[in-house]
Amino acid sequence: MAYQPMTLAQLATRVRRQPDEAIRWKHFWEFQEEYRWEPADVQTRLLIEEPEPVGDDRWDALLAAMAEHLAAQHDLAPPAWTRSRTLRTPWFPAELPSQRMEALVWAPAAFRKHGVYLSARDLEAA
Image (cartoon, rainbow, N blue to C red):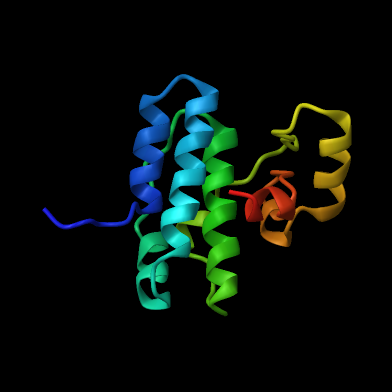
């Protein structure tokens, strides 16, 4: 079987099956790394399929924010499935107050729209 990059829908499946938050983040960073190495036409295909809910609204919003953010980098509209996945209460995944402040200032627009405050620098560091 040839290598196939992970889709956001596959990432959601991994997150849903994994109760350990640290490992969930490892899967998230793994998706980002695989995504970066793919050509543009493949990248956009990795975002289209609607992920099944993971059972945690925060992670559902995070995946929607990621899809919208990455689609915008290709000057594309976000996938339709992202519209309903927003949080009423903001989520700051970072634990340190200084990291939370940085996320408040530097979270990309798509993440803020979905209520997820993750610094743009955190996304680049993956």
